[in-house]
Amino acid sequence: MMGRGLSVQSSNPTELKFQTLNGIQHLAESRRFKAWFLDQFGVLHDGKQPYPGAISALEKLATFGAKMVIISNSSRRASTTLEKLRSLGFDPSLFIGAITSGELTHQYLQMREDAWFASIGRLCIHLTWSDRGAISLEGLGLEVVENVEEADFILAHGTEALGLSSGAAIPMNLDELEKILDRCATKKIPMVVANPDFVTVEARALRVMPGTLAATYEKLGGEVKWMGKPDKIIYKSAMEMASVVDASDCVAIGDSLHHDIKGANVAGIESALITGGIHAAELGLGKFGEVADDDAVHALALKNNAYPTYVLHSFTW
Image 1: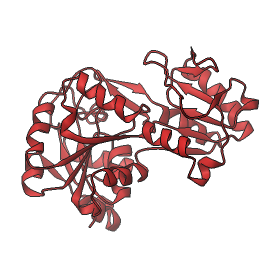
Image 2: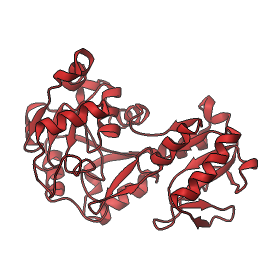
Image 3: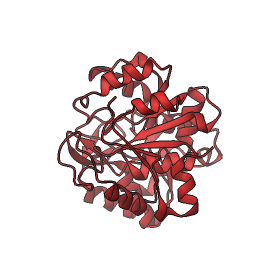
């Protein structure tokens, strides 16, 4: 069964209908979804602190027997994501687990069972983080190279630095990284992007994510393997983790139309858009809890070709 947003989209997007809710209590009491797939940044927290009401909403949702899975386009491993939530005051035991695009990337590069990954070689240009801390490639059997001529592929974990063979990283700005991508595109080497987000919410500001570099690389003619939302691969993994086989038993909660909502559309599951996250400024929202105008949400959904079933101002009960 497809969500209402999907059904409307397939017939006539201009007639898109979504249900605006004051909180998730209505979903918990009326729909009884078995599996809840929750984004973190922009939904549960802003990277620095939990959003008001988010912790208590999770605790109340758990009393309904909901199987909650974090699905995140974080380029870090799933265990790191759960530890981050713990440090912010969330109880990791409320979740049956986490699936991150970084975890999927690690698994696919390590196992090499997929034909595409088996073919890409092991010499990589590594785009990583500096301020946030470089991401380790330990256990993947990869060799980081700094010369584009030697590289088999690009691995995009971050947008702040170029990884070195020593394990260290040289801080670089976006322009410098894009010059490297230009040389890579000329050589036609593929890219694996471990975080498909374009930007993320960080303490009410927006921070550029690896998806922006991947989009630039595609415009340069490069081949990109997107390892997270909106690709259905991450939803399939989440359903397996929750031991759910029917898409109608699932709902995805997120703040990004392009990633969270479009991904749910692709996976054929219902979705709820949190308007106070990544799209807050576009929707004219100035403070937490402010309610977006339905017409503005409608226009933005059409612009992004992503159709939520429900719309909420925040992840609150």
